[in-house]
Length: 144
Length: 144
Image (cartoon, rainbow over all chains, first blue to last red; front, side):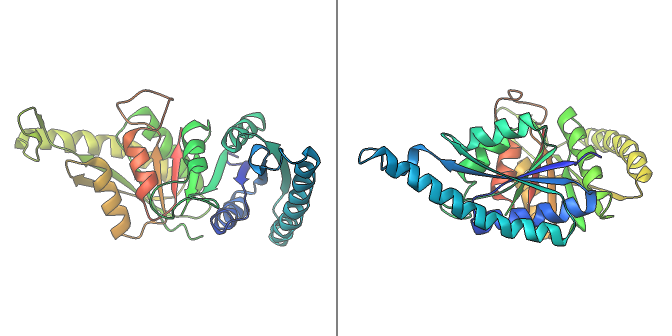
């Protein structure tokens, strides 16, 4: 099987939901396993100068929220009989984490939305999808 | 996601051959129609840049080589029971030709190699792949 492992980097934006649905469809046809990876950016929280515990609390809350959200995806994939494994990681650089993850798990295909939460829409690729499409070692499918 | 029509941007480099293989893999369970698109850019003249003038012999030569390659591709597509067609585009700009063709014919997916015949390998995306990934309206799969 050539596409046995599919990675979907997920940030909860509408673009990433679209990417997940595409991946689900491909996985159904190819009987592959889906890895969903959500990255929480450590540096970007900005509360470190008040109190370090604030940051910790924010990360914990974010993790909880992400878990709730990802459970919905789990349900969706179970309905269509697709294996799924969910990962939530804290990191300093999102694109680097995605690439490291895809290399270490030997992913066959990355399905990623053209944009995430930020950036102007539809003009050019978002920064993360741009970096992933350039540096990943496996094929990258960019959904629009 | 529907995957009825897939466009493969092809220049018979190693990367585009790999892109074609991956396109076959992904298309197999869908039974999609695959179009091989090749762009003939014309001759480069330093005084005018790329022009669309070629001698008849040269054009005939080009198409002859292309058809020969196409026969080879067709045999591998037939093994997987997929429809294959060839489209030769004439345009001085490769990425523009591919984008115009894909956007006007409502393709569901463009498969493209990360590099073509020129460029620093494996550092960044090639110029054509980058342009297509940025500006296409449909999903794009970049194959390494």
